[in-house]
Length: 530
Ligand code: XUL
Image 1 (cartoon, rainbow, N blue to C red):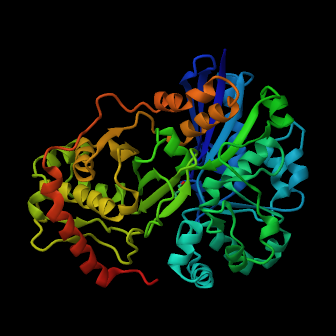
Image 2 (image 1 turned 120 degrees about the horizontal axis):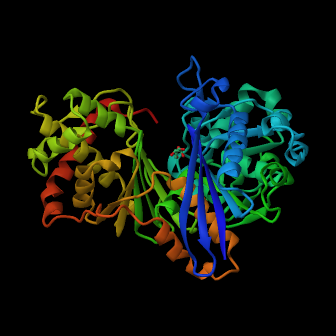
Image 3 (image 1 turned 90 degrees about the vertical axis):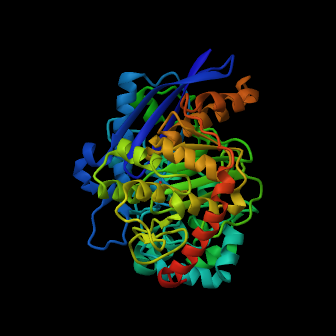
């Protein structure tokens, strides 16, 4: 028997659906449809740019939550009209991490609403205690971060408890700022949801629990005890415990789809809704991370390096989340990713193919010339100020050395800061920057492991479809076969595999040490205040 499993990814700029057709007998499957809706282009009346509301304050990163539910309405209509939704057996959501939605006392009634003639945005508008949601791009909470960090006993103590130091974009500091700046709206707030649990609540028709993976992006979750951390709640806002969702493991089925979706979009009333999670945890599964030692590098606007492990030590400058497999998911986010690469590319007036062939013209190790890619303030390590840092005597006018320097410089920073995550057995590379064969080879040489490019660029939505398949089929033969299903669906791009070359690591060894020295010297001028 075949059935369909639907994965949704509500990312910053778009809502994506992936449909996985599953053969329940054999446990095999394939992706049969992928559809995306971009908020700026398709819902222009919300006035967003890159999915965010424009503001005079560059530190604010916000979006209207009703825009996401409107996107959900539109995307469901398209899926109904293309693939049909009656055969969907299970559905799961992935969403941008950290963003929060503030709901008032009317929320349970509004979520339950059954009038399929009215739009979701119309039905849910009265349920909002705050018309905007702060997003992961928001950096307005430095004051609150300091207050919470101090109350918890400093950065190391905060990271040992919650899996991360206290970060501006994490939900706890965002809640604290809201409670301080808008006490009346905070008093009206009865439920704080994350984007993943909010959309899951809409699908199931009542407030849904939050999974451990997304909870780990709040600075409120006790990572080892798998519960809300009382000391972090006390340090954040009064009365917070009663407003937070219940917590549940990443494979929990939260209920059946609400009658609104049955009547409006033709879902089977038995369709199971699996708990939502954050996009990083979901992508990890979607690109095939299942075992300790599996790792992923996402080369996008920012570059993220993540890997699975058991009880990983806190990552200085990074985060520990929880993967769908219940492993720790260690993650480092490097702010200077593709925009910094592009700056070098544009400097020499080449396209990406020209950039890659320039890299090939310079030798491994780049004749000792090093670059730190801090075009914008960096997250790992935390810096202020802008502009590349070059090693003394750097050949500024030479395209080959400049292009190789940025790739090697970025990859060496990733290597040096990822100690507790390594060694990797295999590394999957995804995102726009993964098109560079030169980068794949540099990463293989430096990390000393096999590196492959993922076939999909929608890892988070694929991961959601896989979670739907696995959780919903827990009692069918698929249960035992799920590692194989993940392996099959996440099959990397054919021919993309790069292996470390003989002696490459030893050739890089001294240079990696010099990279650390260059970084330490540069930090004396650029380190961000704690
Ligand atoms: C992770 C983070 C981003 C968002 C992007 O901590 O802030 O990767 O999850 O959606």
